[in-house]
Length: 155
Image (tube, rainbow, N blue to C red; front, side, top):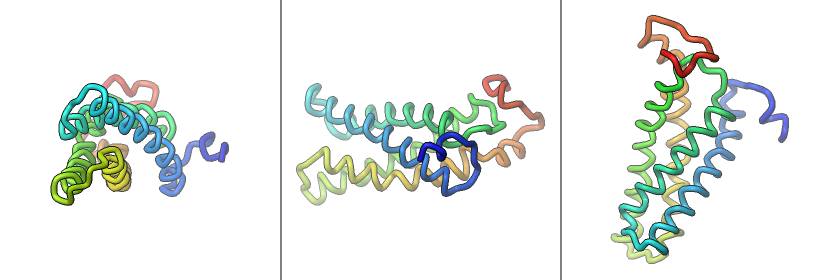
């Protein structure tokens, strides 16, 4: 298992394996803050899910760049923007699952509903990030210049 995190690979299976741990860590951040916002701050769950999801996305972005999709040519600022924009789909999936379970099906366990929504959004998020966010071919088509991995923050 340690080897899976040491070498840089472009294989989807290895990336999915790594993303499982990255996504799991981000999910823990997301769910913990959701519980904090709803239980301790008494924020409505429909609003709390947006705040907690945003913190989970920030965690996911940081870890994806470090562990999952390394060695890309796209400038980091562009990857950051694409990462956050693509996460809107995950947020929408999460929100739809939450509203369906809580309001339509009268499910009263908010944290469990959040776990279900996060689980459903996991595979959607990985696919979007693999195809759109960390796809250098997309960047090469939309840009006339190339950047090195060391200068990712500069365009």
